[in-house]
Image (cartoon, rainbow, N blue to C red):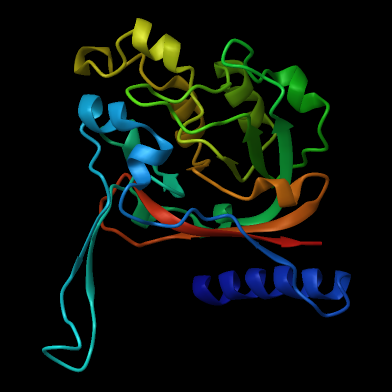
Length: 255
């Protein structure tokens, strides 16, 4: 029953997009390519050295020299590239990605362009009040983001706790961004969020959203194509037992 309902939702979304475009679907791929070097390029070498995030690994297995098929071993963190966070990412007893509500990952999308904001200028509720955000929307934040310099972490604007609560109150389906994170990392450094003794204060934006079953998608690409557009958003994760997140293939179907 649930699979049938989900298939119907996807079909309606695609049909609506096709009808609006005379039968042609305008699909924008929002997914970064999984490749060796992805973590260093997008999050920085410091993320690997300081936090223990593994770089992507790809190794050949089956090959056409020894047999008639080909396969590749892929090693990738659940928290790099274009991915979705589950509750287990920030809470020891949080819900895992294989229990995610797929209905929260398929729906109408609205782009919030905040590229004018710096790392000292957070996204606040007043910024969202200016947007046409409706119940059930998937809110995609377009931050001013550049790949980190050698030895540095990336720098970007961020969501405040109040902004996260605003999103909960307005019943959004999910949020997404073109960056590896949405938190105030300077606050995180000052409060030592990575210290297990500080679990209670760490990652407040994630906890506010994920505790309300609002998934957080990060690492999107090609958001230029969504500026000024309404679109249907789809991003489906791998079904990994007990995991804190998963890579996703994210797309937008333009209206």
